[in-house]
Image 1 (cartoon, one colour):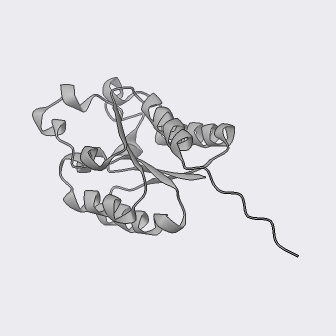
Image 2 (cartoon, helix red, strand yellow):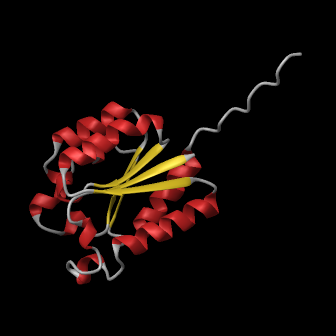
Image 3 (cartoon, rainbow, N blue to C red):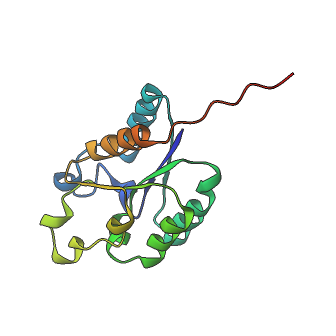
Length: 153
């Protein structure tokens, strides 16, 4: 099983941007932890981050051939991007939405998500642990792969 972990705009600034909200761990720290977790769970975790909406959509379009589930923190695009939502629907993979902070206790404009309605699960306010919870759930919820039928001689 392969799980794509996608981070949107400004998440490359983890560790330095508002550490009181987002913590002191960097994106590299998070990605290393998720790769280790994937190895522990027997799944492959592939991480991608971009500050550009089009790059995120292009990446998503390639996932049906490469991944079995998506864990995504769309950053600010959560509240503004119908096209990101449409791309997630279009690829037909299970989606798990993650937010480091609790978006429901922040500014009013952050309380609406275009992604939540199409996500299999939403985790917010749990810090970087939210990614771990989402990866674990994606791995546990994956349909069992059928073993190949024995060949007839």
